[in-house]
Length: 294
Image 1 (cartoon, rainbow, N blue to C red):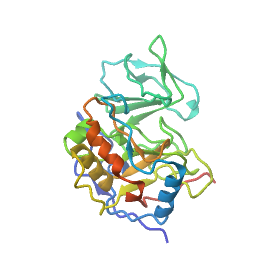
Image 2: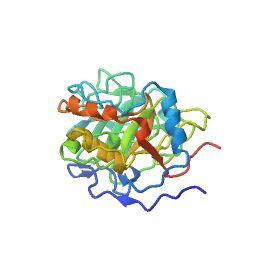
Image 3: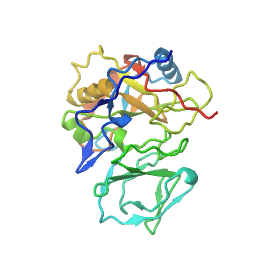
Image 4: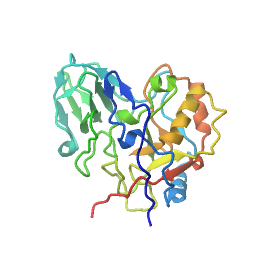
């Protein structure tokens, strides 16, 4: 018999920016999973991830005096809407126009994500493999628009700007959250390979039929008895969130990598302490069944 997740535990402080909540309190991104049951395949999934890579410890992919991390672009109604041309997954993308400033920051590396939050309309615009044209329009492999006021589910099996078909912004650790002492949401994580299926709130897969591999949307929690008392402030705030909200597989990438925003204020010495947390200190929690194509 499959375990049954307990009733949703609503966060005491829903993530927000300005007057915009970052999805409703009952959204899975904002759900406290500290009392959810351990997944029957928890040990298998943890072992599989560790055998895929030489990296067996947590790795924060942000910091470096602002060199690393996901750039977050905040705009308002004064920013113009611009056309988007999709170059790969147009049939699964939300058509433009998107509200993107001419000087929008693009994620470094090959993924080239663009994440834009419209603070006036409380909408999120996200693109993958994005390139700006001379007329300020954009080309992108895929893209999605999210209304932050509702629990928004894309058509089944549709991608987004992320491999799991989820929003990026709500799962990224923000500097201001950590500075204020609380990260009240799940955290974006990557692993090298995934199964050809997903668990809500994921909506898309990119993997193989090997059932020992974790699916997109799988949720991990730092074990309750793992000692975080010695960690410096920034690392301890994040580790506390890992116990309460955990991580969620959002895309294929390096093992045990968690995502934070690009910000010059991160303290690399404090963040480095997260690299002492082994993958074996996590457990997988059961949040629902895997969805696959029949």
